[in-house]
Image 1: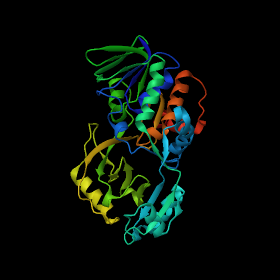
Image 2 (image 1 turned 120 degrees about the horizontal axis):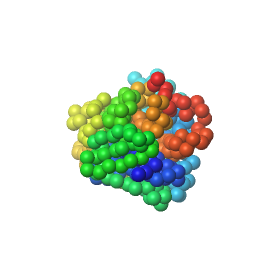
Image 3 (image 1 turned 90 degrees about the horizontal axis):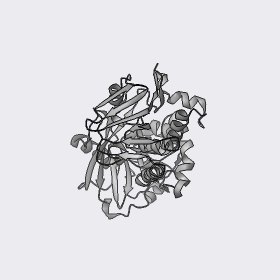
Image 4 (image 1 turned 180 degrees about the vertical axis):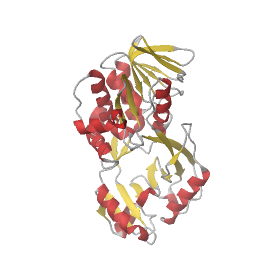
Length: 358
């Protein structure tokens, strides 16, 4: 018997476990062998306050101090560059303003990223206050907080049945059973499936695949200090990673929940778009993979009690924003569970609530 059963061991579930562990007993159930296996383990690991819609940006701002400072902080400077082709001029100008970027000359841009092709990528803009985010350290910080307060963390717990009986949730993986007064749905791509098992109406949480390739450092350059590079209209992005370069096609292909892998054709097309704008050809990949970014229909996170069953709490639809919003989201979950006034403004809380879907 526990106060909170949390289903899902990604950043949403682990951060919720940390916060809720101050309010009562917590059991976190993860289907895989390890925490952070799916979306959380395959994140681009960056923090940019101006990334996402207005609600996401409010969560970013509310999370920033924690990410910078708690437990020594998990952020390190990276910077971001937006690059565009000659034909991208209109959208480049719009996206530069939206991200709050400063224009660079071609020479300034190549000083930061020497492989940029000045003929095919002449449009460049920059801001310094974009950060790498140590996703593993952040997960471990929240996990230590939860464990210090007695939270029980269970892996290999793939949920098969959920029912509400006698004022309690009864959750089973077929071999083991758990009971709790509150059920927290932090199941990522599987959030609607968990809701359906619990007799709760699904919200239309849709997973989208995003692929990634890890390339050797182009032309032998030291890429350590290169910024996060984003092509206009999300045609691709690139980011240094332990001496190599990560390049993503930035695709968003709707898929069923599954253990994702990169689509060879999508990856090839994305790398071709990247090659078009640089002077160093892609000769080989060190590795490739894919993850799932799950969105609600309105592309905003879903955080709060189900309007028809308040003992069922949604923490879903992170859509690639999970790490950069998790401090504010987990605080909100705890406030809502405890019946206290959230620190977030009421408009943001309402915009996150599952009640917005009627």
